[in-house]
Each structure stands twice: as structure tokens, then as C-alpha cells.
Amino acid sequence: MTTLHRDPIEAAHQNWVEHGWAGAADGMVAITSLMRAQQIALARVEAVLKPMGVTFSRYELLMLLVFSKRGALPMSVVSSRLQVHQSSVTNAVDRLEGAGLVSRLPHPEDRRATLVEITQAGRSLAAEATDRLNAEVFGDLGLSDDDITDLVRILTTMRRSAGDF
Amino acid sequence: MTTLHRDPIEAAHQNWVEHGWAGAADGMVAITSLMRAQQIALARVEAVLKPMGVTFSRYELLMLLVFSKRGALPMSVVSSRLQVHQSSVTNAVDRLEGAGLVSRLPHPEDRRATLVEITQAGRSLAAEATDRLNAEVFGDLGLSDDDITDLVRILTTMRRSAGDF
DNA sequence: GTCCATTAGTTGGATGTCATAGCATTCAGG
DNA sequence: CCTGAATGCTATGACATCCAACTAATGGAC
Image (cartoon, rainbow over all chains, first blue to last red; front, side, top):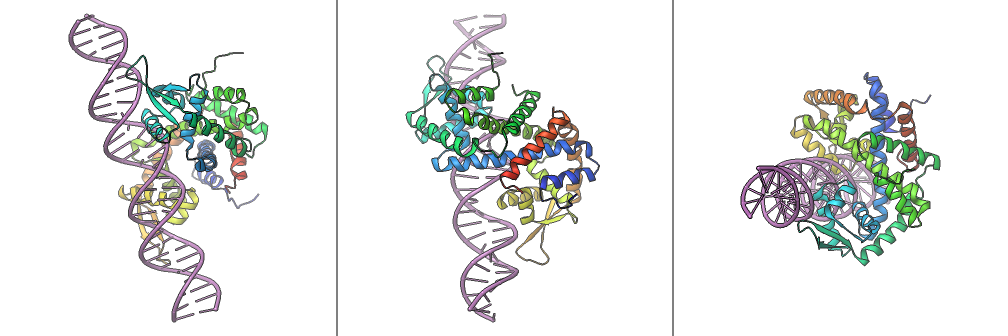
């Protein structure tokens, strides 16, 4: 057995066990791995999107509009679908609107609400960004098909257990 | 088979396939699931830590010091172990120092460097926070032991593939 | 009909991350 | 030695997220 653990997470597991927290060590490692893997994945995605002038959160918002029937949704719907705070949507739409990728429109039936509509430029950029992400990130995660299937299944279990859907 | 898919991620998978991106759909779902699961896990952890006056990133820094032999490490070491930018460490140490949980000390051998040392108050808070996290989060992720094992294995594969360690 | 709770969105403040630039110190090469 | 490259840390700015407070509009209760 090797005593050299280069992986900081494996080292943390050892520390947890040595301090008498063996019962929670696996859960701690799972959470820590999740955080770190997300950090890495996000960095890869952002690296692809940065040259195009958008961030991942703005890309997500664009894709949500692309998949909507009319290319437009109320801010509140965007917020609930993306699972982010209302004010985060306000922020993202401000920037996307400034870049000409979406437009704000008054809701025809509810004067409180605002519709966000994707522009032609927004659709073009979203299509191009998706092609690049599919090719450079989503298509090559460094995992086998079985691992990807298992990963999604386990994370889905975890999300459902937390009441995500 | 149900046609009602409440899970936004499952809905996104359908959209990806319908737009001819079936080849990358599984990878996209994996990344999206990862992002969302991390968001949920972080929220759970922060909810436990918030009443104690610390955030997860500051907690991680404290635990790193707890596990160090002398309870003190150079800023640069903290940065590399936690895998965050130097300036993020400066920020976190500023706040921890303000709360009396760590102290900055001049490095005895290298006047460029600064040691971060955990205080007694820092150790107490870290111990208390760990007990709560172990009990309320790490010990109950809503996953079976086998799922946790598989999750960690897959995420480790992914991290290693990305050159994380 | 009128009043109040709810909903929609924005604004401002706090926190965290990264990138870049700048200052101080260390270390190596000539 | 002495100069230039590399290292350690901090300051500033750009983004994203959340929360709390505030404005505006809707809609139900009476």
C-alpha cells in the first residue's frame, strides 16, 4: 500500500478517519469530490465560452430561451427553471441585453412581468457555443459511458433526495 | 413510461436529443447534474455553517490548518492545497483574521512569505462546525454506501483525467 | 368596490472566484 | 557581487450568487 497520497481529497479522508470521524469520512469525501469536480468542469466550460463573450450562466439562460416555444419567457420562469435567485436573472439579462443577445419585452397580460426574448444574434451565438461545448467538453469527459450513466443516476438520486424535483 | 418529466435536467436531455446532439447529450447531462448537485450540497453545508459565522471556504481553510502539524501554513501552501487563487486566500484570511480565528505571522525564514496560524478560537469553532457537518450533512447524503463509493470513484477518475492530481 | 397579501422585478450590499498588476524578497547566472 | 528572473502576497476590477428592502401590479376577501 502506498503511503504517498498526492490527492488532497484522499489525504483529507485519512485525516477524518484519524480524528475519529470515520463514520462521516465517506460523506465528507463525496461532498469534497463533488465540489472539486464541479470547479474543474466549470473551468473547462468557461474556457470554451470566454472567447465568445459569454459565461456559463448566461449560456444556460440563452439555451433555455432557445428551447422555449416562442423564444421568450418571463423572468420568473427563467429563475425557477435555472434554479437561481431572481436578482441573478436580472443581472444576467442586463448583460445579455447589453450584448444584444436578448431583449426585454413587457408581458402582454401581466404588467408586473417582463418577458426575455432571445434575438437572432443570441440564437447564432447559442448554436455556435453549443457546437463548441459538445465537441470540446460534453463529448469528452474522460469517463466511460458506463461511468457517465452511473454518475448521472447517483447525482439524480441525490438531487431528488434533496427535493430538487 | 411517463411522459411528464419534472426534472429540468431530464428535459434538457430530451431537448439535446431532439436538436440532433444525441452524441453529446449524456455528457451535457452529466455536467449539468454535477453543477446542480454541487449547488445543492453547498447550500446544505452553508446552511449549517452560517449560524456559526463562517462560510464553507473559510471552514476548509480552518480544517487545513487543524490538520497541519504546527497549526500554521504559508499562504502559498494554503492556496495550492485548497486549489484556489492566491487572492482568494488573501480574502479568506482577511475575514478569518478579523473574526479572531487565525493570525498572520511573518515567515521566520522567508520575509516574502506569511504564515497563517489557527487560534484557539479557530480550533474550537472548527471542531464544533465539523461535528455539526458530520451529523447534519456528511452523514446523510441520501445515498447508499455503494452509491457514495461509486460516486467518489467516478469523480476521482474525472479529476485525475483533468490533471487534478 | 376597497384593502391587503402575494407576486414580479430591480437595486444595493455582502461574499466568493478569478485575472491582472504591482511591490517586496529571494535566488541564480555571469 | 549584481542584475534579472522567479516567487509570495496584496490591491483592484469583473462576475456570479444570495439576501433584504423597495416599487409596482395583481387578485382575493369582505
